[in-house]
Image (cartoon, rainbow, N blue to C red):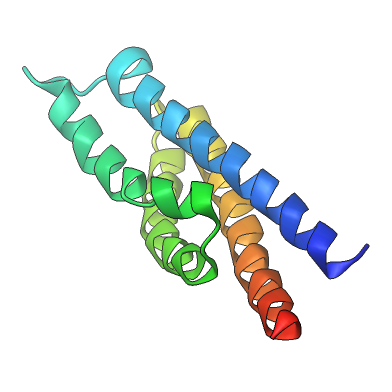
Length: 122
């Protein structure tokens, strides 16, 4: 597999897992298990907005932005592990943790392969 093919494949996996994570968070906090408050959308926004800030980067394919996304994903992974420990949210937390692992790995590999590919073109 050539470097260009690796870049393309990792970018595709990153986009799919990124949007799957956004959908999971939306379903989790607004439909499946909303917070027991008057405004569950506030909790959803706290989880959703930091990830949505990377939407342009993920679509456009900026290597440095993907590396920053990986740093942010570490915080989400901690939350997913905590959710896995709770009986009511065990499967949602496990699903989120798996999606985050896939997204983290594909985004990190994209950042690495894209920077290598760009250096080879210069």
